[in-house]
Amino acid sequence: MYKKTNLPEVNSLVICTIERVQQHECFVSLDEFKKIEGMVHTSEMYRKWVRNMKVFMKPGRQLVCKVISVYNNQVNLSIRKVGEGQRRSKLQSWKNEKRADDLLQFVAKKNKTDIEDLYKKFDEELINEYGGLYPFMLEVVRIGEEILSELHINNPLAKDLFEVIKQRIKIPKAIIHGELHMHSNRGDGIQIIKKAEQEIQNLAKKSDFEIKIVYLGAPKYQITISTENKKKAEQATEDIVSKLQSLLGGKENVEFVRIRS
Image 1 (cartoon, one colour):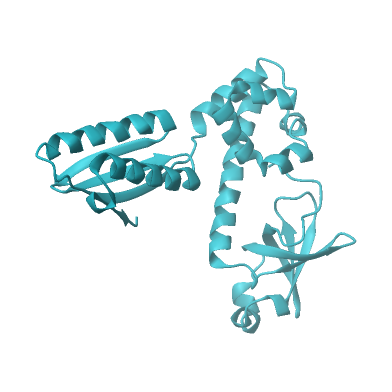
Image 2 (image 1 turned 90 degrees about the horizontal axis):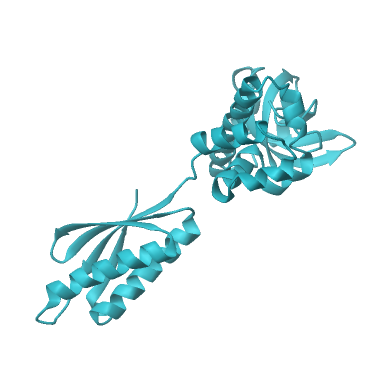
């Protein structure tokens, strides 16, 4: 698997595998880095883990740790300073990196290229800029084949890499589910609401987000908004509500209730 050759940054989260355990510390390998060992002192473990070191700190177990200091190639780590949300996020990132690496392995094998030679195309600066192999591949999907020029890969390898990335890496969607309550006091209110629906469908096309509206029974409509990231999804929701309020005569005629999923 692709491994970084530099040292991890202080306060960053890293994936580690337990190598050996002593009375007051645990030594781990940093799975994302080449031949770098880290140490977790018992003061940086949960008390329950310290009391049951043989149960919780078995060699081969994978952990998410926080880098608390780096000095002369000695990396000191903490387990207890990693929040549960951070742990889950880092593990998902690790799974994505393994997925991206499998893709590179496939392309290298298909083109009868040594995988180490392909790894060399992804220098440390590029990986750090994008935050990993997987985020770089997401940018390839978003921007197109021309971004591969940064790797200085010649055809047909570049073309094969692009095609495989495009087929196997999908841009994740941020989705907001909600319920819209829409009213109109005018005599032709039903027609006005239908026209308002069409207007926000047009807004979705112009603003590059997807929207689905399902009639639940007056005045309720189920609405699903999806786009490439959470920030854009939140902005799209605000724009939709604002547009509807303008079309239907004010805030009192439009209510959006978010449904947590």
